[in-house]
Amino acid sequence: MSTQSLGMSNKDLELLIQVYEQLVKLKQRWIPINNKEEAIDVDDAEQMWTDVPEALEWMVPQMGIALGLIEPPKLQIMRAVYFGSTNKTVDVIKIIRQHIKDNKIELQITNNVMDGDPEFGVVKILQIDYIYNDQIYCVDIKENEWLKIGV
Image 1 (cartoon, one colour):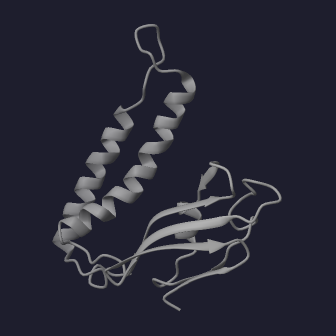
Image 2 (image 1 turned 90 degrees about the vertical axis):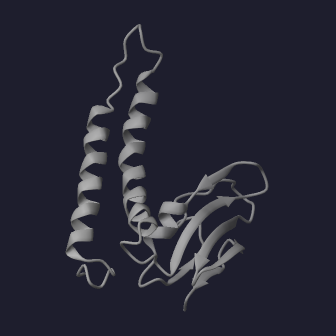
Image 3 (image 1 turned 180 degrees about the vertical axis):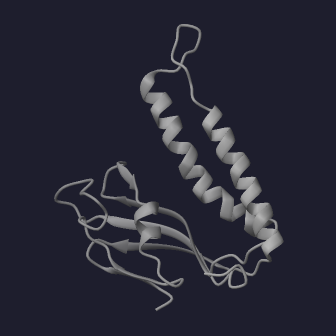
């Protein structure tokens, strides 16, 4: 994919890369130390370390869009949760985003695809909020039905 297909010049891309590199340096310095002076346990520290690259992965393109350096995608998944009849929900936004191809998605919603069954014996629901062609949508898809956007 060229910088032209992203709607950005080489200079804009260089600026975005510089911003990204600064964020990576910040991430590398953000390594919590677990000692008596700090109230961070090992699990929290590991989770914080995991969250930083994920945040960067999302933040850098968003910054490029906000700065007008790149065009926003036609399809943006804002929220996706999978649940049964109880309050136990599973965040499946990464799974849904992985299935986007050319700003389209066609996916049967099953426990296998959603990476598990949050409540055995109950029909689950995928609740998804997304933007497609600058329109906001909030839909519920029942287990074993199809999520189809842009097809």
